Image (cartoon, rainbow, N blue to C red; front, top):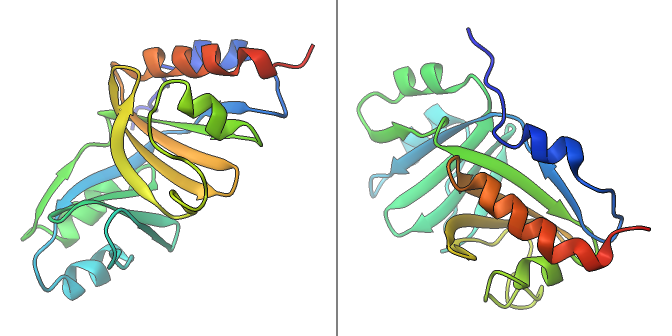
Amino acid sequence: MVERGSVLAAHADKAAVSEAVSLAALPPATRLSIRPPADSAALEAALGVTFPREACRATVKNGRAALWLGPDEVLLIGPDGLATALLKAVADYAIVDISHRNVGIKITGPFATVALNAFCALDLSEMAFPVGMCTRTLLGKAEIVLWRTGSEAFRIEAWRSFAPYVWRCLEEARREFLDS
């Protein structure tokens, strides 16, 4: 199997260190776009994760995350290399492997929301966008999936072709917080 590289490797290697706002390119992952049936119990069991029951929320189990992106769309994110096995186990369902399409970026720190808000108009206060919430939105001119994974931590899923643009936007937004 050929190991996938990151389109963000060069950017991540040059990223300045900041405790206020940190950026990291996430390793390759399995990503499945799922159109779950009304009764999804068998599908959830085969995938090893329960789908969220509330809109714009994520559930995590067995190292896999299920993000509710719409009434009939769930994004499953798991360790790299699971796609083939999972797709065989759930061949009768509407599932597409989009592992190669997206790139993951992690943004953390006490000023992560400030940096995100420089290019994303969502209210990212914990009251409006609590831990576990996720949504499809815009960052600058790029469509992303934004998931709050912790009080000061977010995961961004961006299309591979837009990932360098998203990274540069985040780098620009965090410039004022870089350590001297």
